[in-house]
Image 1: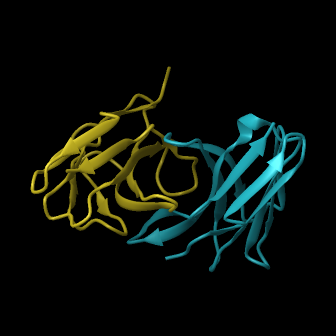
Image 2 (image 1 turned 30 degrees about the vertical axis):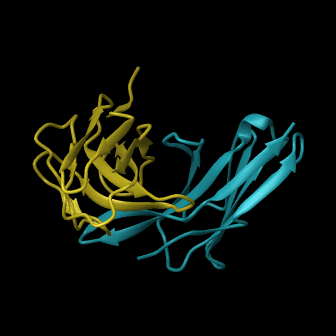
Length: 113
Length: 114
């Protein structure tokens, strides 16, 4: 099955700095989604970007998609300590006629005050 | 508030016992999912259901079972056949079917086998 792989595995920055996380995947997709997970909690959906889109914004989040390189990036601008979490990309896959999401292993972001 | 409720948050069971995890949603979503997450890993799909009375195996269904008798409920049983059941289990739902919609997650159940 397709799988997104995030890079780096872990990222440590200071408050106010920007954080960039990358996701690569193997085969063609219909859409790519980014999620956030605070420690011990469920995932929270951040952004969905479709294969015919190149960039989407939501507040301090900016997602880009390059289908020719099979990659996406998530940029968090002016980071805050509250942004400390794990971030996952997820791509759609076809499984027995249904389409399901396949998640990468995530990037763990630590934002220090 | 609309959302997904998983219970219990922590669960301890002895080896050889079956255990059932609860997942309820009041978002009126048709699709529901169960995932397993191991430390430092991403989510792996166990089972999913697009509509009531229908469900499909995911990537790691062996040793697990589910039912979908009501739209709002998708209980999940970890059977004694599951070789390594200690993990964090997450339930999710989405409007419509497929992966073209965002998924909404519960806060998980952490299962430990004693």
